[in-house]
Length: 450
Image (tube, rainbow, N blue to C red):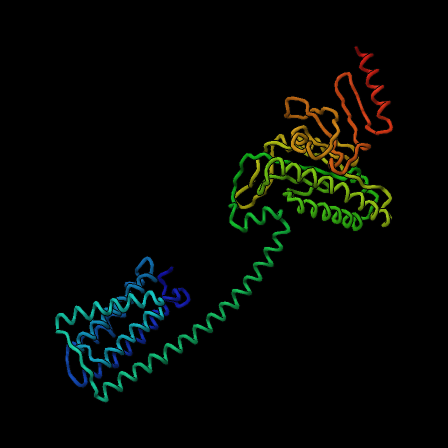
């Protein structure tokens, strides 16, 4: 709150209070001048002069120099109520003038602070009345003098006229503010919708819900990391026009992104035809469930890619586009990286690098996962054991597995075992029609080794 007296910088309640004080001052002045005309009591005249001409200036200075002008004005309101109550004591509770003054108190407090301030204002007025009455004596009278009655009626009419004017003006202001608020809300919603396209839905939701602060902040967390790319995409760029290539790439990224969102993945970034996604932050269903969601997403992406290949073939793209996918689970550093002016929500660490290496080592149309991910999903998803790979930053060779499909979608005829280790390379097909031959071959191999 500034100390400027410019009406644009004054709190609305403060402005309303000053208007209501002006109304109450006019009412009190009209009534008290009438009383003074009939009974020239110079104490009343002096009090009226102080209240009308001096007190408003003092109250304004108090509010202007206060750290919180709004609260200062409301305290001044109680002082006004106290003074008006004291005047009823000076009038010996003369009915019509006293009712008029109490109406000024009620109007001033209700207009400014509602029922709560009405009670405070009336309490202050009662206290002022009791203090003065104890000095000048208690009394009660009904003055039927036409001049007093006319002055009281005129004051009440003025009060009603002004309060209705204020109420009407406030209604117009509220309607205008509501309209401006709606326009501003629509504008902000439009802007938020545009910004949402640059953020993963989970990140967007956590920021706009207030769950996460937009500041440089990182932490360690166990995540499942996904990398994929299109095999031979670089060569394809040399044989296609840029417009066709852009359309194809956008279609591919859009389809894969929809699947990622469906399974709750946080889309980290697009790097040309490559996609980086992770599960476990900012929202997580648990490490095991996150790994299951990631591998399930990869299987659906692979299936959708088969459908896209057929559609692209009909558009004249003869080269079949196939993807490679790598998935790993492990502790990563996740959060906002960058500066105070520009941030990037992403993940880093050896486990991220491992996921990228798995994608690089995957064969065409293959989903290659690490042993850590395999241990989390093996109960529901069938995998084949593959070669060990060496990864920079990882001390021991990493065991890899090829994802086949959900166990529920495979029958015995499709199940097989593939085992590769030093001095051994074994592949077993559990086709029922060949089961006898498989058993005989295994027995012979064991016997030869022994």
